Image 1 (spheres, rainbow, N blue to C red):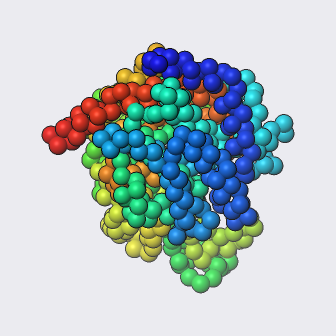
Image 2: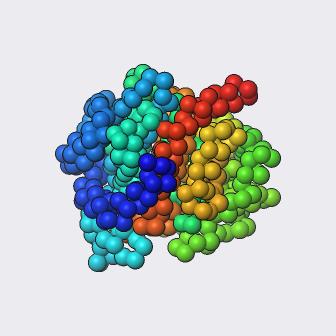
Image 3: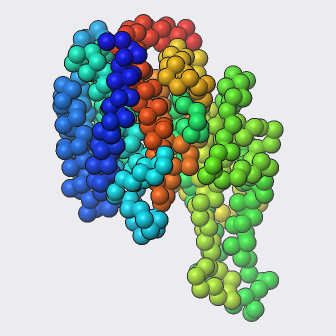
Amino acid sequence: MTEQQAVAQAIEYFDSGEFQQQLARRVACVTESQRQDRDAELHHYLHQEIAPQLEAMGFNLHYIENTVAANRPFLVATRIEESHYPTMLCYGHGDVVFGDDENWRADLNPWQLKEEGDRWYGRGAADNKGQHCVNLAALEQVFKARGGKLGFNCKILFEMGEEISSPGLAEVCQQQQELLQADLFIASDGPRLNAERPTLFLGSRGAANFRLRIRARDNAYHSGNWGGLLSNPGTQLANAIACLVNQHGVMQVEALKPTSLTPAVREILGDVEPGGMPGDPTIDFSWGEPGLTTAERLYGWNTMEVLAYETGNPQRPMNAIPAEAMAVCQLRFVVGTDWKNLATHVEAHLRAHGFDNVEVEFMRGSPATRLDPTDPLVHWVLDTLAQSSDKKPALLPNLGGSLPNEVFSDILGLPTLWVPHSYPACGQHGVNEHMLKSIAREGLQIMTRLFWQLGEQGEALIAAHRAHKEAR
């Protein structure tokens, strides 16, 4: 069978309705990882939904308990055809965020897949059940087209705790490096640039949360009796935040600005324009770092956001000067940012501007990652996306949001290639989440062709990647 025949076979499978039936069954699994009463559902998803599909393709299954978060297990599936074949590691997560059942449209149920025009509604349809269903279906089509072979070695890592920040994932990758050893990483999560353009992204921005707090005194005091005599921590903290990021959203902490927005990256982002599609919010073009395009602000720069702010009692405000104020802030950052010293940099900046009473507490963070955009593997995937869709694909040096990509790029040392099958207005993490049928169908064409070509050209592709890496 030829490459084109394999792709045609995949489309025939999709159009038959079998893919939709499988996705509907998986959406019906209530795999909310934040809830402790969903443990059985999480195990069921791996053992009864994912495992049989992989066993039918001759994968060996390794169930691994999570030593960090109980009952949020891992599954590593391996299929080794020839020792000299290149090995691809793939990834997916079967858990979802809260269903939020009562807030969906009255005619929708988050646990029942419903087709409406080009949309398949259901919790997990976009994040991530629909996306890994596309990739597993593509593997199946190549496996069948080659008479029971892939033409490359394949390993797949599934987790059931991604929506609670992937506890234990780094530990599994550290402890199981031999089991997870591979030559390249290809997976699907997050959104495309937009619904129309197939997209490849090479990593993700990092995220670091930190808390600011001013404790002025032990008690609140009457604003009429003491106003003008006692400092107001709410007012002071508002000014401290404005010292970090101004009224136009421009970050003021020089030590936390990136160094990686190079001319080469700017050239890549010159072909990218975020937003502007139906369902997207209206972009505030005057917001953020001046002199940058919208794409450079989102994918090539750092932003500081206020996630929560509290002083006094917002539900029952009193005529009193509050005793303290607290804000939770976040730094979204790209590679080349000294984020591990975030608290030190924020505190030094505040002290230099007279805010000696602000406590700065680093809460948690994950690093930024980015595969070299000039890597031959990048050119291969972009060419394949173009061949499969007859469209010019979008290349993003990194996703604007965050994924646990560092465990694959840093711990396992793999070149990471993400081909998403969703789009920004999919309702991910919100109500009325949906997958676009057209993207799923196109995604299946793309991944079938990609996996077929890996079986044909894999050894040469990996050799070119290694030569490029050694030359830099």
